[in-house]
Amino acid sequence: MTNLELAKAANRVRKGIVSSVHSAKAGHPGGSLSAADVYTFLYFEEMNINPDNPKDPDRDRFVLSKGHTAPGYYSALANRGFFPVDDLLTLRKLGSYLQGHPDMKHIPGVDMSSGSLGQGISAAVGMALAGKMDHKDYRVYTLLGDGEIQEGQVWEASMFAGARNLDNLCVIVDNNGLQIDGKIEDVCSPYPIDKKFEAFNFHVINADAHNFDELRAAFAEAKTVKDKPTAIIVHSVKGKGVSFMENNAGWHGKAPNDEEFAVAMADLEKIDAELEKAGEA
Image (cartoon, rainbow, N blue to C red; front, side, top):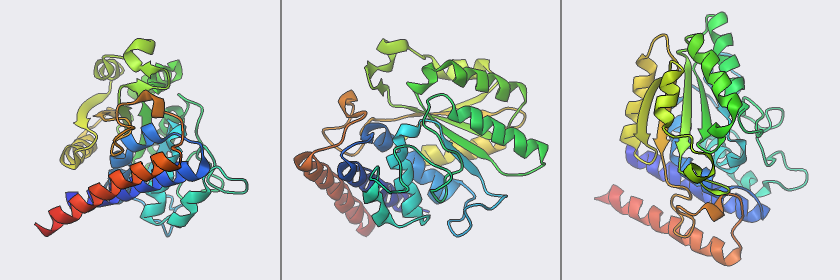
């Protein structure tokens, strides 16, 4: 896909995030929006996946370690064709298969149930090890939050991945700088993130989470790495695309009311218009 096509897809993903969280009257929009471009790149370009065959044994795997940003994950899956986009509006509602955290038993395209912070990367490491043991070529991707990496289990899993030379593993850290209680550096600083992963025998790449050229280069580089897992630190804006949510920790885990929803959708409609204009230029 071209960068313009990816940008349009990412804006659809953002609309799905805002709409679903508003409909649910609960959820986590901030970190979903910061990762929307990464979700889009993974599902529309990077990963070997097929919505018509979501259990293909040779598919690439994805584990959402920061499971609370499920609205972004679900929106990417829906817009990629794993299930109807209209179903996003059932998020967290009684009887819906779209629960507050990903559920591999009921949601097409979800490879691992997740939500307990720090645990998703361990599952991804296990999948990567299984791929090596089975002599399979699939790659395993996992997305972590920068607040989440304050969890000790993240580093146990990283130590194992580095020690076992799992070069089929790609860890992505969404570094938007904010968590529920404020700035990550004020709560319990994980910095320098890149140096920490390097110490665990990772190949480390830094990239702009909202620049598709940088994302494309980062993931392409990761595929060339041998005998080491890769960590891509993507530097992002929490709440990206919605004016009043950007860089605002207060939007980590709450839903917009009707008035805020209207403003948010207007912001995203404006982005759509700008992208259409860019396509005509």
